[in-house]
Amino acid sequence: FDGRIASADLHDELAARFGPRHVFSASQLSAYGQCPWQFFAAYVLDLRPLEAPARRMEAVALGVFCHNVLFRVYSVLRD
Image 1: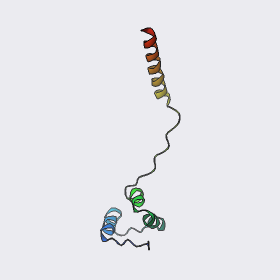
Image 2: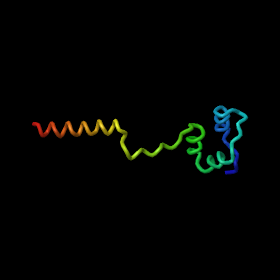
Image 3: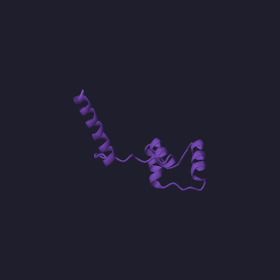
Image 4: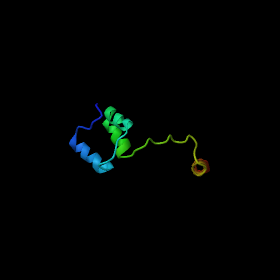
């Protein structure tokens, strides 16, 4: 990869998306050179990695869960 976008179609698409006078940083060009899909996802679609889910339940979710479990247990014991 020599730092130039050779495809005229891609050049036109990027100009339409970012503006014809947009200057790409060295890291953006490097990202494109390493993996065009990652460049597209990060800089064109502006996708970001998801945050890791919390290992703890929120209070409301925990309360609903406990109520459902206790309801089922007592329903079985009652019958």
